[in-house]
Image 1 (cartoon, rainbow, N blue to C red):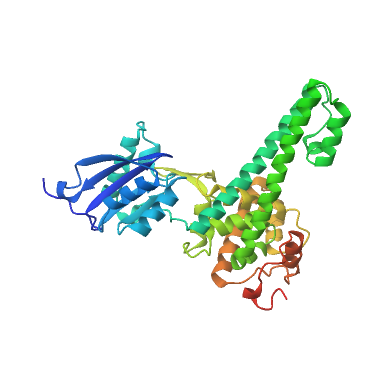
Image 2: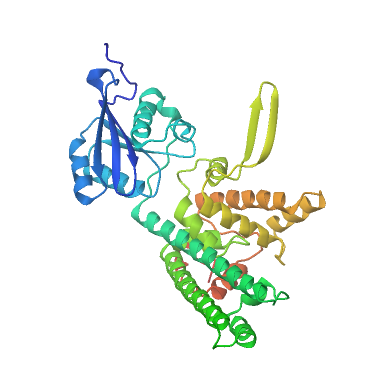
Length: 383
């Protein structure tokens, strides 16, 4: 069989399917016209990564799906081999998630054939995050999980009150620690089974809130370590520390996005379009994208509705509301505006000044105990 030349010049193609402990690999060689499949396994250990790296040489193309195990392995191979490493966006890798066959062997074969058969300009690639970006993203995701766990625990305590005939309480009544403890002391005796169970729930919530406080302190420290990007995002109305850190962790300096449209598409705040013949239907935003940024930037947009100061974002909200748009759609549009403003400010290296001065940012830094952040990168703005 005549060798099938690839435009990008690969000598061998490796498709990797990763799991927590092992990986399955498919190798396609130029000598066989990239047809013969060589399947092998490796362990996701130091020895396994070293052995995998020893197999690779210059001219090899290695592709894998993005996932929790991908970043570390991709960086390791980039630093220890001369092979070209590619991480594919799993949300756009239709050959995998639309397939009826989901074995590791079949998945690694599909990835190798995807690289073989698809024009490189159409590869659905995602950038490999740095070690710092990985740490920041892990911090964001851990804080989100902690907040969700607190909500779950409070809901469980609220259900316990209802189960025992105390149905007039709201979940908001249990949000404050002192109020929560007083209610348990008032309605449940310490000596019976119900009282002991309620106090165990209180202890669980208190421990979760203690972890959340620790995460918030780590978030402040992380923002202080990246003053330029942090100040830019924090200067935008509605953006708090968690949203700012999500943007710093996943967007960085914004240089990998050439237009605001690319950024909005990455976050997942663009409409889903269904086309068939001459028919075109436009639906709400798709749910493929960067969830930590999307959920926080939407929250930032909602807070614009409560903003007392006048700015273009507030005026945008008022105009859309006057036009009869529902608040969910308004929040998405304002969130897109926030992303566009943030991308523009990152490119220019400027702070948002739509409020007339920077007193709003200074007050925000004081409220969130972030006055230690180095503002020297913006000259006289914050002095």
